[in-house]
Length: 305
Image (cartoon, rainbow, N blue to C red; front, side, top):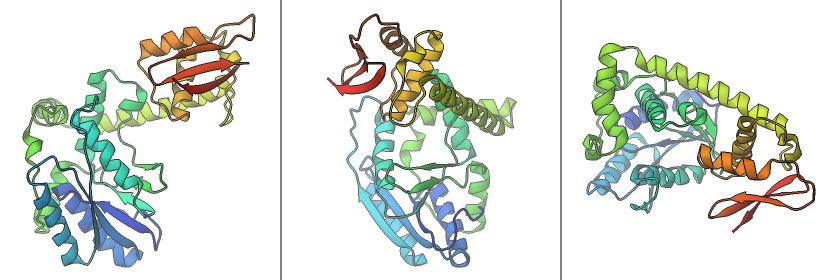
């Protein structure tokens, strides 16, 4: 792992206690003195496993032995969340990282995780943003920069390093449960893919980069089509454009407004309601259960329902 932050940076390692995060913590620790980092670790206690208390204790002890500041946060995960348990746990976890009083949060996702993410999103039929996978860096809403310095390392390389260094870690028993889609992909699909395509990780990473570039260009196109200035969007510029351009602009505008875009079919319906020449100043409306998009005097806005 190369140094990914300037001297004096306040850095928190997301420490679950698993092998990946333990290796990441060890690598960061080896660079701490030379880089003069203010290094700490943050552990998220999801309360989903009967071993969760043991994992927290393990992480605390690892940090105490190494002289690393440690913080544990207990979160409530909605087991009945519409997006599933995995997604709900991820939302709760990232909320903790977002609120961390640091400059940089390091997470231990690696090349196998990236390949599984891209494959999962492709099987779901997601768009380019989903197939883009996990970015190496991104700015969290609360201010810290999130960095994944192990994305180019394989699970095998990480395991070998841990063994060579004599590191200890804990195993999450839920990783063996193939009822979770990610576990099914990891345990059932990727071994078969790897046997035929041994370089599939690199291929999936390349696909993710291509998708991210294409998504960025579509966002640029949406800015041009809407004349988006960060505040206002000119809906009249979309009236004569093909429906796919209208959907694209609406999709990205919703993202810029902090809203999750609906399905393609829903976007298509909303675009048809919003982007059409109007002989009067009568507002056009489209929307779902929790908000409505209003086109008034050719400006778009969002109103609660």
